[in-house]
Image 1: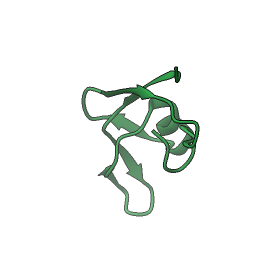
Image 2 (image 1 turned 135 degrees about the vertical axis):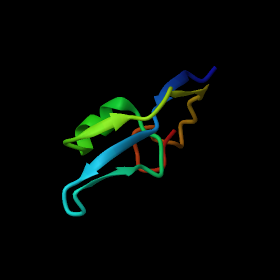
Image 3 (image 1 turned 120 degrees about the vertical axis):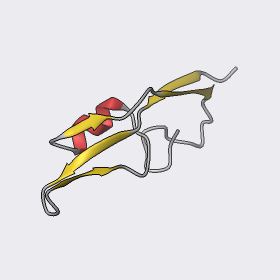
Image 4 (image 1 turned 60 degrees about the horizontal axis):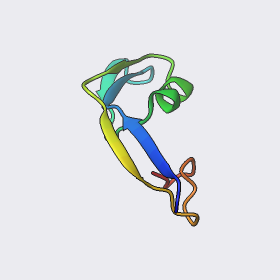
Length: 66
């Protein structure tokens, strides 16, 4: 039996200091990833919850993970 992984992915916006405006992200991310990458951000809605069994060939924290 494979372990089950659960992710909460949030739609969000971030402040772009070069363009000096808020930009809506084209992807959803976990809250910890948003906090780590952007200095100024805001959530734009409810999280999308994803659950599934963890495949040993996929690194969930990698660039193409769950």
